[in-house]
Image (tube, rainbow, N blue to C red; front, top):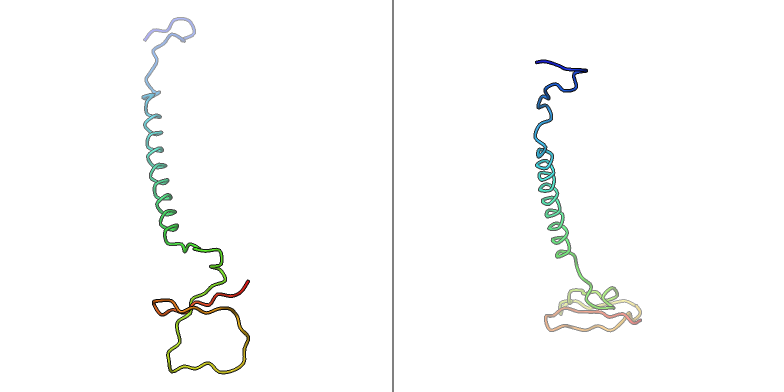
Length: 98
């Protein structure tokens, strides 16, 4: 190998590698991010489906209690807390006044 001048015109060795290797690495990162977003989206979707949803404005005040059996009687003193309704399926709903 001959050098002329300061040696700037010498043979360039191929140490740089393939310029498209960086693009392949970016593609791999993109695939990993896409899978991560998919997993997070599915997790949020499943949590949203299992969360209870309020159905009415007064739903926070109303509560459903099991209906007492015929042999049970209430005793004692108390004050009225609202109106009670028995549903078709036997549940007792108490709606408190505003």
